[in-house]
Image (cartoon, rainbow, N blue to C red; front, side):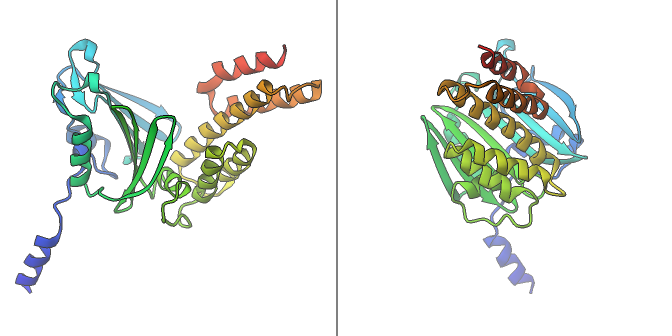
Length: 274
């Protein structure tokens, strides 16, 4: 029995958490565990409360002589449990001689993310979806720059839903709101904004939606409404006072969903008056 267990151990890969980050860990553990590559003596951390979410942000500005890979990161906690993380890699902010692409590939492979389940390409930007042990990773590459989004499916099924929209063979039934969010995401890619609006609105009404999916769906829904109204304005599809009032109400709704977009949305509302 001991020999058998030892043999199984030899066959089990030595999985390493990407940059020391493990989904589900606590805030204190995260700050101690996070290990970017490079010179990080002048890096800084900030903390922000967003409703049920708490966001810890790491920054390593090259202006202060700080060069690291990743050069920035955000960590989203639900309670005291890490639910998602975003890593930003910029060549000009990385240590000299760092091959970002090779670093990311090597680190993710060590973390078990070796199989690409789906891909998408648009205007020079390529997105890859990978999955491992209840976590979905979204790899977005634009030239030499890379953004990684790592999600714990149980608490933040956003990446999983987007992967399915892109063609990945993953189930969504056990994740409230994920089916609607996935269908909405697919509609956005097809520029079917009104369909996307209905689907994302439906996702928000599903009971027990995770706080992270709720927040993301609200933001994306606001963007979709803005895009639909902007398209209608550009195509001359808003002519009557009734149509302008309806579009204005939709933009007001979008502003309520995502206050961070208020400047852009108010600009669109001004265009309705012309």
